[in-house]
Image 1 (cartoon, rainbow, N blue to C red):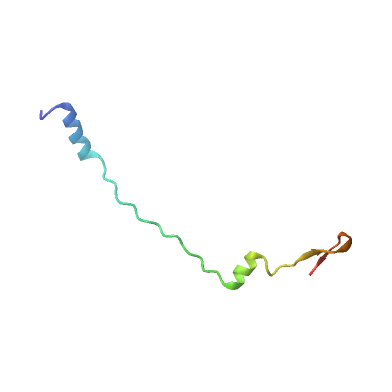
Image 2: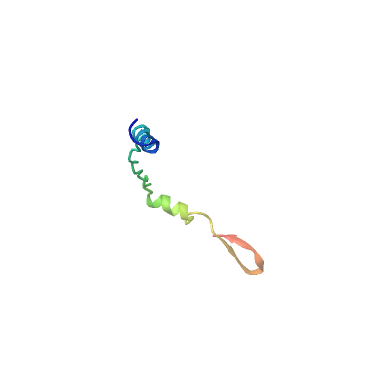
Length: 60
């Protein structure tokens, strides 16, 4: 037997533990939106409701 039991265990552990491979960096996919898509997401193309005298709502 070579060395103490602790040394043997350390040597065995070094030989038998799997080495971690470096992880690849994941890239975020960038979404290309047209100007029309952005306006629709902001809600600028939809109907607008305004409150007038007497509490009535009208659509513009």
